[in-house]
Image (cartoon, rainbow, N blue to C red):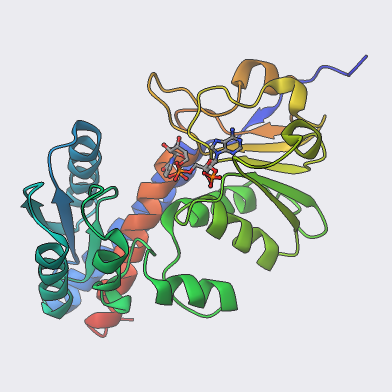
Length: 286
Ligand code: NAP
């Protein structure tokens, strides 16, 4: 019979708070040296309630963290060229240090074209091809916020990554794929799973580090979790439910992220930190 344990919780809220405190101090430092506060431009297309709420939350956190935000709300009727022009203008604007185009922008718009209009030095959400390539080559650049937040959480809890089998379920460009690349860069042996993967359960059962990034509530039952595994649940589904069945998984994992309070707060903390870093570089501070 498998041994029952209770996993230690990975407190993303606490770590995020510490990151935000230090980023707030850095923002104040920039302001006192230059008279200018870091500024994040947020671009929202349409009125999807979840996107509206995400952007509002990000702007509120910016305000608390000493970062100005400039919000651009565009109607759903905006086409690819309208959105690209707006983002290109913000890229040229010296008063804007970071740009966030809220995903998704709608099926009628070429989201990639909009992302590519972000100047790389302002790509604090890590969505451009240049940022992605820099991450792949291990070169300096901004990293997609959620994957970077996940790596910071693993480091906070001294998780040994080198030589371990990391299984990433999900391969989206903003989450699963870059997270796997960051784990690979830290010498994990990485397996990606996706909607066409055969025999998902046997692969997940081999994971020393399991990252769930699917977007389906309780998709991974505790019985799939290898005893002693580290479980990172990036899923965030309606009702504050993750992609892993928390109650059954915590009886097998050694460490596990709660939902909420695990990966979620780390994403916004990294966004603020990267915005302040972008402003520091553009304003020649530090
Ligand atoms: P996404 O773009 O919809 O990607 C979902 C991934 O899951 C895809 O790669 C898909 O495979 C895979 N998948 C779907 N069904 C599957 C199945 N039956 N078996 C195995 N894989 C399957 O989603 P996302 O943007 O990466 O987000 C994933 C989750 O993370 C969502 O719950 C989202 O809310 C959450 N999220 C949280 C944060 C945060 O800050 N905490 C940030 C971003 C996202 P295919 O590629 O084959 O379609």
